[in-house]
Image: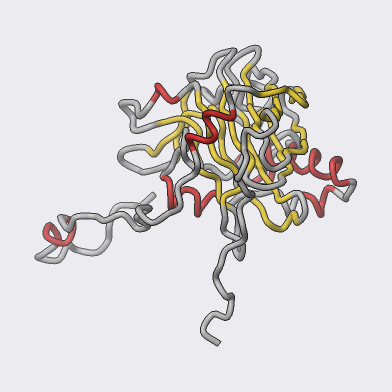
Length: 286
């Protein structure tokens, strides 16, 4: 947030502020996901895997290309921190900043989750969202943000001088270390900024600080993704519960989340191909 200014306003300050904004990345030429194909395919799905993520913990799972994945609220209002990695190269992972630049601060049906440089390609497409009715509230908030960085024990140490092990960063680090059979200190370097599923967030009007409020999610709600490539998913059931009061502690009421993986019927995706790596030459003018 910006403090009280120390520099006097110039004579043309009002005119400078009045300059109209433009969208940084117009998406008119962005290849659109095949939503009609996905909507048809999701009408005949077979459940092939499911797991439950316990409160203040995380799990990883396999999500093959061409499959659908649902994150489901099952017991109470609970938010989750979601990571995706390329199943064949963990260095290619979800890029929340680029996703935010292309689609905005919050994602819903038809938006895509993009991967990191040098690949920059769709990893997953949101194909259904039972909270899409929420839209934007009176505070400028919405659901499923790609703003937040995940709660982590390092920031918690700075702010609260407490060694807390069940922040989402730690949860995801333990889960990835267990899934890949690697040291947790190595795994944590692959954990990255998240898609905050079910989390209601925005920016405070005056200070523009990141805010959170009680999630509107209820048991039975879900967000669904289509895998544009072979993925490993990671989900933490945040220690903040519904994030109405705080996080990074054992104070909030927390609930489990369920992950369901579905395979479409044979032939439903005929002609579809997984996303391809970015076409840039990587020569950078040399």
